Length: 248
Image 1: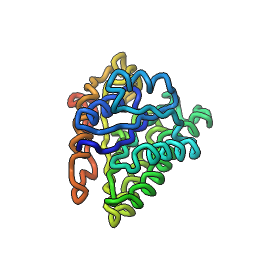
Image 2: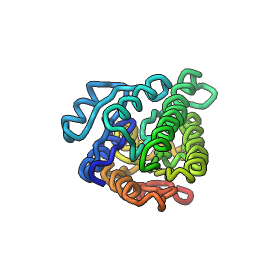
Image 3: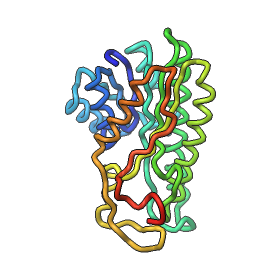
Image 4: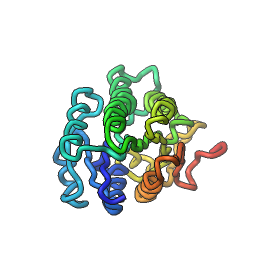
């Protein structure tokens, strides 16, 4: 996988940073993006400044996404891998109390941002020689199973599954392989509150175990290592002791 080019959204922290580090170890040049330039630059320096390239962009902004991929095309001339990792959660409040701004924020970052990036990746991957590439979407276990008070996040992650299916079908004849990784409780800022207790389906509050994001990164590297005539369409990587399978 040496000399391949990747874009990782939300690449400056948490799962995205772990994925970036793992890809660099496999020889990738990685463009990381997020809203905070200082965070991206710190991540690039911490991993490998010669292999990690920071480009600040809000993926919910269509023009910013176009600029991001314009940078990739100008600097490298091709794109082999897109990891749609960026996302936000919403306040865990009853859905009727959720401000519309929070709904729009989740839809913009989690769903629209992924779609915008896929659009740009498709344009590049169709035009380049050799044609094709790989796209991996971060679906979360919420892509199949909701938590209490998580309507915006859950709805967008269910939508990511539909987007993965549609993009996989549309990309098939262009050698664009599209898959999805559903993550359960990777240790990050987004899941920090789980150690102190989160609401369960029965209304109780219980702490939940988390796993090292490096496990997610290794899974992404495996998915990316496949030739374009093979695809991991869906993969779930989760904390084994978390209350996901069964009734909790």
